[in-house]
Each structure stands twice: as C-alpha cells, then as structure tokens.
Amino acid sequence: MYHFFVDKEQIDEVDKTLMIEGDDYNHIVNVLRMKTGEEISVSTRDGDGKEYRYGIEEIADGSVICRLRFVKEDDIELPSKIYLFQGLPKADKMELIVQKAVELGVYEIIPVAMKRCIVKLDEKKAKSKVARWQGIAEAAAKQSKRSIIPNVHAPVTYGEAVQMAASMDVKLVPYELAKGMDETRELISSIKPGQSVAIFIGPEGGFDDAEIDKALAADMKPITMGRRILRTETAGFTILAWLGYMLEGGS
Image (cartoon, rainbow, N blue to C red; front, side, top):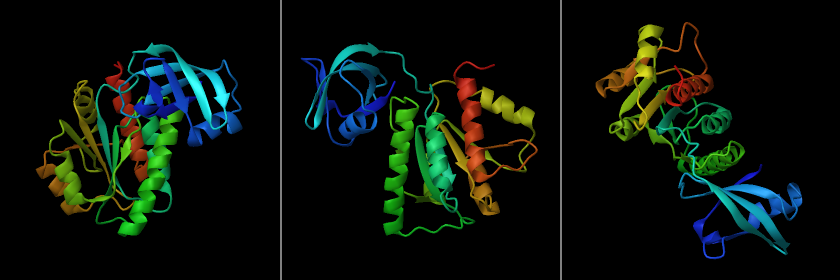
C-alpha cells in the first residue's frame, strides 16, 4: 500500500474526492504505474492522526482523481512527542539519522552545533541542507506510513537547544560516565504516554565537559547506552527504539 501526504485543499469533503497533481501524480502514473481501481493510503500534512484510504477513480492528463473509501481512526504515532537534538555529524550521516529517526517515530529533529562538531554550516549551506533533510523526512514518513511529516529544524546553537528543551517533560542525555543500566532502565520505563521527551545526542567527538555541566544544570537526566561506545548515528536510533518499545506497551 503506497502512502501519500496531501494538503486539505486537495480534498473535496462534499464529493469525498481527492485530486493529486505534481510530483505525486508523476510518481503514481509514471513510476508506480498504478491503475484505476487501485487503492492508496493518505495522510494530511496538518497531521490530524488519521489514515484515509482512497481508490483511484480517474487518471487524467496531469491529475489523479481518487474517491474516499474509508478512514482509519487509529493513530499510528507514538503516544509521546519525541524531539531529537542531534549534534551535527560529518559527511552525510545526518541524512541517515533523519531517515531512520522518522521511521522510529521521532516528532521533530533539531540539528545542534556543538563544540566538538567537525561540520560548520554557514547560512546558505544550512538552508540547502535543511531542505534536503526535510525531503528525506517526507520520503521516510511515506515509507513508514506516518500520519505526520516530522519537522527538521534549521541548525541551532547548543544554548538555543537547551532553551528549546526547557519546557519538555523529560530530557535525556547519553553520557559515558552516567550510572548503570538499571538506573537507565528505570528512568526510561517511568516515562508516561503524553509526556514530551528531549533526547540530546553528541557529535562524533562527544559532548564537551561544559556542555554536560549545562545539561545537568538544566535538569537533563544522564543515561548510559551500555558498555560499548556507540557512534553518533547509532545512539539516537537506540534510544528511539527503547522509547518506542516502552511507550507502545513493552514490559
């Protein structure tokens, strides 16, 4: 089942029809080669949490007309909003991080310029990168049938990131000097559905000592990732997987 995101304006709520044009039209007609009668899954870009099933009714020149068949009310999103504050990694690692974080249920991704980041982005490069990352987020949301497209922010400073996370219910920071796995397990298992969760991940060089001090002063909870040192792109995935398991009924 192929999944698409549409704007509310594309839907005629009276006739129960949907018009698809542009890139999605090209993808349906020329890439997927779908035919009338086939079904697609649709979510709206405003993230109402519903999945709409439409049947392709007509393929015209430049547009695909679909008719609503039914609505799935079950929300497939995680019961908590998880914000990933990711220290900017080198090369193209951020593309992988965005893709997999979206698949694992992240709500928003905030790239963070930290002291030990190797990558330095000027405003022009950052704008281009964010557009690329947002496109990857949308593709991953379609593939994993998310009901929302997670937002990828423009890079922020570490101080700005700490301020953004200040109002969130739970703030986690993986740190190699954190206490053992029992304490980490207890902390993660105590997170309740509906609570907002901030995850801070350091870059390849890890957190600077002053950054950890600032995190602890902001009531962030240090956690361990186990006895092995994980790469920056692996650490976020691991925590997201843990949180998804616990929040969706794991024990």
